Length: 155
Figure 1: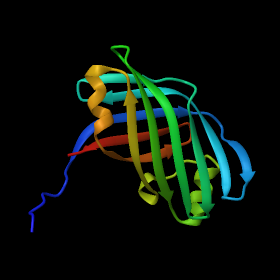
Figure 2: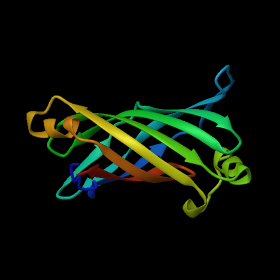
Figure 3: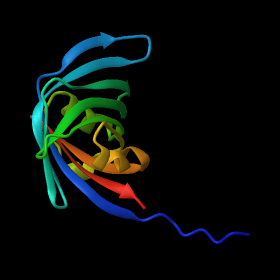
Figure 4: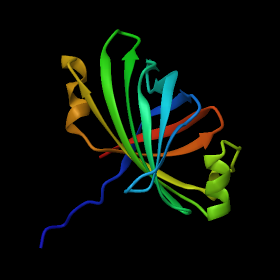
């Protein structure tokens, strides 16, 4: 039997993504559908920084009073001018009363919410091509006007 070393996590970046008011699509065949426009934001990595460009969105599906599936898609631009497409899938769960406060846009203690994500990246930049060849995970918190996240590379 092979002796596998468990993966470890290495810090990749902190993100602060500014969001607009939700567009409530309503109850669909799959659940309560919402679209949250992305207005911009900041990214800070180890020795690098970037900005979140306006125009992306977080496509949310509220499955039940406890759980939402999130699928955010947006572009970041590094200080060097490189563009990176981000697709970040997430699961957010909490007690029904906590989720209801989140959906209404009220402040919620992040300790009351399970918010885990798996971002993936695409870029045409040769120097950043490696980010398309790695797995990343993260954790986040929803604030009334933004989502803050910390991403880690799975080593």
